[in-house]
Image (cartoon, rainbow, N blue to C red; front, side):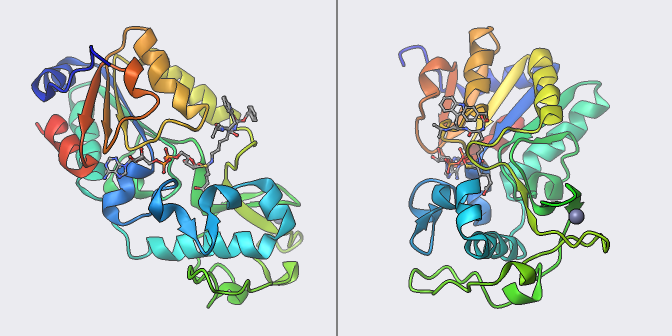
Amino acid sequence: MANISSDMNAFRELVKSCKNLVVLTGAGVSAESGVPTFRGAGGFWRKWNAQELATLEAFNENRSLVWEFYHYRREVMVSKAPNPAHIAIAECEKRFKAEGRKLTVITQNIDGLHKLAGSERILELHGNLFKTRCLKCGDIAVNRDSPICEALRNAGEPDPGTPSAAIPDKDLPRCKISSCGGLLRPHVVWFGESLEMAVLDAVEKELADCDLCMLVGTSSVVYPAAGFAPELARRGVPVGEFNMETTPATGSLGYHFQGPAGVNVPKVLEP
Ligand code: BJW
Ligand code: ZN
């Protein structure tokens, strides 16, 4: 840890001179918008750790329960807005574009807040809360219906004592292609599932181009995303980590800025 710098002015200078900035984000970038992070105290829904429900096994075992969980998270987002970290990243992308430079967001988040803040170059590694995928015909669709289906209207209550709504498959979200009508699932990447090849290819290109990286609000425990910043650092690309705490990645990175992303990210990105 001895060589880790917290010199914000030095990092600001790197931002001023870089050509291709990659901002890798995780749940912590949305924490100040009031979106619960995955791990830690806020990561529980009813009695389950969010990780226990974000699997295909959980979905196959209890589709109604997993849909309740994702319905709840979709509804939570209705009242959430981008915070100063999302906004500083989006504004920096616009400035860079005007100067012939590039800022790309690679996010593990499914909440859509980077787009809402105005970012355009976004690669979503783990899918999107507002997209569905049909298990019968494979159709991927944007879906912002609230509620996503009638049967979920009053479901999804996070209190630990809430009984499962036990909604039969026929009343869960169904494919809108009328000749299909298959069961839908959230278009997100669960544990043990492969990330989309097209997204991984695009990520690889951005990482190859990248000459400066910011790693914001991720615990750096979930792969393949957890490997991206350490790999850049190994290649000699300066990486700054913005987090409330240290992570397994910290020791391999050049800079660590401890504190809320909503404070420190604007500080290094402001013109
Ligand atoms: C703040 C803050 C503030 C708070 N300001 N900071 C190699 C080694 C070991 C295992 C594997 C491996 N390769 C693959 C695996 C298996 C697995 C994995 O990584 N397991 C590990 C946990 C051990 N990976 C996979 O299965 C991936 N698939 C894959 O690789 O396929 C091929 C394959 C399969 C099987 C074996 C081998 C290869 C898929 C991973 C999909 C992850 N999906 C989820 C759910 C998405 C949908 C949903 O949201 O419901 O993605 S899990 C969850 O974790 C979610 C998140 O995107 C992801 C990362 O979490 P994140 O963003 O880091 O959040 P937190 O909560 O963990 O951390 C928040 C951080 O913010 C903390 O550090 C706070 O301090 C900080 N913070 N407030 C700044 N204000
Ligand atoms: Zn379908």
